[in-house]
Length: 279
Length: 304
Image (spheres, each protein chain N blue to C red):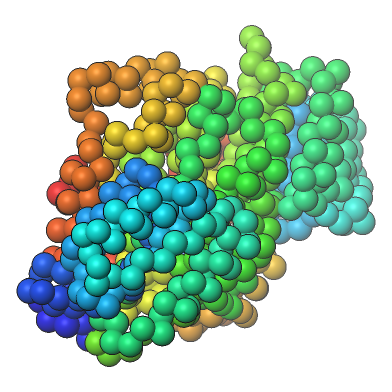
């Protein structure tokens, strides 16, 4: 895999420690990094970064971020880990993350910028469309799940402009819910559908970027727990409970592993929606 | 190539080929063949004794629908027109009342800005107060929308407040208003409930420099698909009206940041390929009268 030329598709992340095995010297930003998929991704990406790389981790919980930083530090001393405790549902949080990214972007010789828009919430799945009479509640949901993804992406990419030798990759952690409606999941489905479209527009506008909507599959996380305990729709709740009971939920590591392969092979069409089960 | 023109014409051409039937607006059209509007005006069916609510009613598509729908409502129906500008609403009300003449159509104007929480609440409150009218059909047309700043590209949207405001009108407002209406008129035997989402090709395809509009429309389409899943007795339709000759279209051809898109809109305008609101409105009304669309479906003017 050649070092990125910063233009066209398939220009790829840097060669790192061997073709296709790493991102080289990278600036990696992961939102929602304290638990679940984001955390697993941070732990999986770290071994694929060359010395001098910077990993910016954002989440609301400072404690959990610091714990993750300690875990990462033990295995990967050559990597700088920056923790940004921020609630992306509000402007101050978004600004804080952008500022931290801007500071981290001064690191010379970065070969790969990888932004992972992972932070998300399920919304109140115990209620149906007809129950969402409060505009503020819906606004608040969209602020975190849609607006912040756009603003963080815009802020980060402006802080790390394109140049030859730099591959810029923007990831949206998507869902089957971006494509199919699920009863009692109006906020989550609408937010995911919105995000997928948003990143498709980005891919159209910026041919130099590598943009991917990755649907990770049904993961065994806190979000899944919420899904199977709170969903108002009986059939959906049962489906999740059965999946859990039968060990059919994916571990975050399983899904992250497939994602890593996709990113490193770097042949996906920019703007595509890829699902764990497609790969 | 991602121009609006090529996308729309592609749909039109492929449907035309399939149906061996051409749009009445194309050259070579036989003058004997009735237009959609002619067919609709001769249509004897109606939409019942309805409570019909139209948002964004003061101009463009909403305004045209207000006129066309008013002719389809039985006497003692109530037509609720929602928009920000009171003066335009009142004028519209007068015009509709004169048009309907003898028929007893109760036209109510609600001045509300659906970008504000209070606007949605005020509208829902006004609708709740119409409970006593006991309609046999509640028809909500979620038409109010904005284009957003199409002169700019996705990477310029760094201010969450701007994006939030946009989503509040175009997504949250539509959901909360719909929820409020469905709660004000809950499911009951003999009551037909129809919810329309004025959608767009942009709900399905990304267009450069249109991130807010595409994102909002994609969110809405999904929202209404979930609604259709949850409420099997509610008839839910996402209707993409085609490229209409309105102020929104003017904004599109003047300001779109993407050059190719801007040119595409300009040539649609200069070559008179834009649709009149009436022509598109007639198709929507036919869909509502036929009432056989799959609930939750996205239907485009050019597919029908």
